Image (tube, helix red, strand yellow):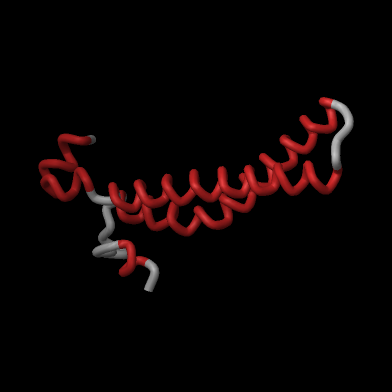
Length: 101
């Protein structure tokens, strides 16, 4: 597959979508961990857990909520990444800003 892509599109074809994948992963990771840390602290302050089971439940809920919210934010970037990495003849995106116009 790599050989076919390289022969048909050249070096550009091999690395097409790399920046989109980088920004998508960075945005997703940052959003998830920032939300997780923030929710974990706020939920611990609000509920003031007494047992380790309650603390574990707070961490689990924080993780699930942070993942759900970060997926909603990250999904548009993931769609653009897949479209840029693919054959790109239908959408013909030149860059990330061009894709979101």
